[in-house]
Length: 464
Image 1: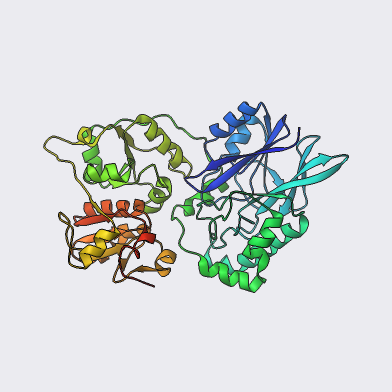
Image 2: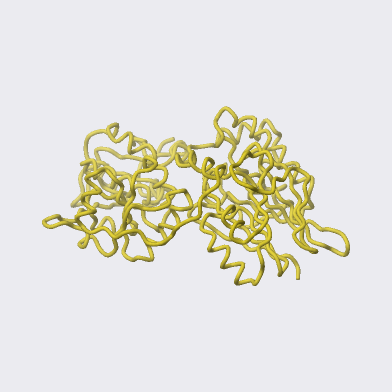
């Protein structure tokens, strides 16, 4: 059969892994740590995994490559230039890995996202010759963008951006326009300089759409570096774990906490995270908890907000939701939550304790309040707090608002001016997380649960 490439999506982190097969054997590219998904897909297709490859030492998640290779006996391809603490098949630019009589991989050095980044061209046998089907580009050439170049430190960002430009041009020159592009990042990952502009792409399309192939090197570098915003603090731990060699995961259930234990954990300054949707959280929740619903990028924000190593307890309606959260957390190296509880807030309260509420509003309500017509039941907005990222703020914000990006809020709570706070983000997810932190600090807060792009039309004065 012809080569088939399947995408394994990790939407919560904005990444993709891949399974490429000829119907008999398979190559896995950049697998996430929860490798049961990969093994299930290989079993479903009836193929044997013979090669596992890494495009680079990842900074945004803990890799499952080492464990997958150990379990399957596959060859594990990692850049020879990366010094790692485990056995692997060290590969470098120009190397070729024979997968089967009909498939092979060609290794292409594409530094930029990291210094030793590799891409892998997938060739298919074609009448006695080889034909390139596509290229696994990791954090090099993405859909309409490239991988960011500052993850190894700002001191390297400029040089790596120049490397990134040269690497993308090399791929474009090396491959035909019809070759598929299969990146790891770009679908919400903070490893991407910007977000993907398409669900799939080819070399030919990237020549037309991607700034890295349309701009001169110096212009690309300037534009790329100017567009970079902050990235999650937990990235500092991912490269270390991946270089040392990640341990296998344990996704078995963690211990159950009763109401008294939940209160003790909150009193001790631990994180007790409510995974329910923000509207359910606003209606009723346990005081002292933090809202990070499973419907959004929970693990990204939790990993960014906490002090690394702080015990985490998970609250959800069902055991299945707790299991889903555990799976997301192991991907960023939070291996075992301290405890969990399921059900409804009433079951998590100690005797005489009452659930807490968060008041919610929208941008029309903010406009009315600022015009002197505050809706009944809501306090006047003495402070409008914007918890979006810096690039979002610079693109336009509410006139007179205070800006503290959500990741900075735990350390900057004291900077938020006195008075009732109306907090917003781009949609309501981050605002609810911020509101829970503010309420835990004793502040009076209203969540603007609305899309920011509706603010202007609602009559809220904006500026940039």
